[in-house]
Image (tube, rainbow, N blue to C red):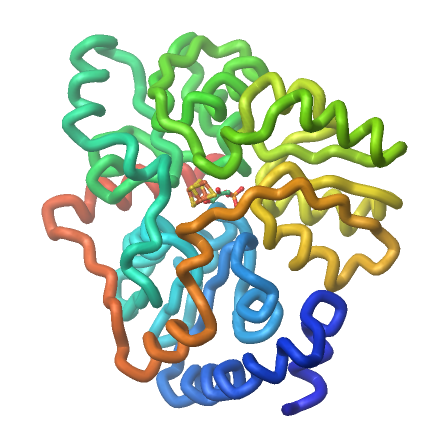
Length: 319
Ligand code: 13P
Ligand code: SF4
């Protein structure tokens, strides 16, 4: 096992566990060179993937931006299906692979293009802002995308008093509070973040004095309200890197703390996390298989391509 590879995960993966992973990790590094492939991994991937084999890691916004710039023949998206679709939209000449095509998202699955058409009919004239956690079909039916990292800026950029924002009801409510824009929301929820409660946060403060609480904006507004700070997964990571809190709790998916803890020895992580079953479908083993068999390739139906890409491009143009 090359020491430098283990060094990247040594603070969060015990050596005995790494011994079961090293062969797949080394095979992946070799396959990447042979296939001219890059691995883009979301912040919720496990540390063996995040630190061990990924070329680029980040939140949904960073992954969309980096997919556009990727200079490789193959992009492996270690994340969920909508992220792989977004990568394909932004860099269509590349082969985009997802290691498990069943890696979905409770938000993306909560809404269809037909639902967007019904909302437009009910609330004519309001622009439709689609969270990037949607299918290409829903993006194509929308005016502009947003992520948790830029939702406020995207909504403000429209310069209107009222917008439709879908499918995350809690993100919509959190953005409405921040912007003062009236938001017509959909009733979709992230199955990971909807489970956090304000009582849980208050209890954390009692049992871990001085803990700094960072909550993802997919959490219910009552949770965000009692947190110290709210932001996308990348914004949370930046906060810990820059402010180096003595104790922190990241109110989000479990792997975030593991991934940040590797390079934050001065911070104690309190971990009241919830697992995303979709993100956890991606493993070193199926990344290796994806590169060996060049499976599963992600494609976008021709009629959806231009309108879906336009919605993502409009988002990326918001400064
Ligand atoms: P960000 O990484 O963009 O904050 O999104 C979190 C998420 O739930 C992605 O599925
Ligand atoms: Fe979807 Fe929530 Fe999982 Fe992100 S964490 S992929 S929003 S279910």
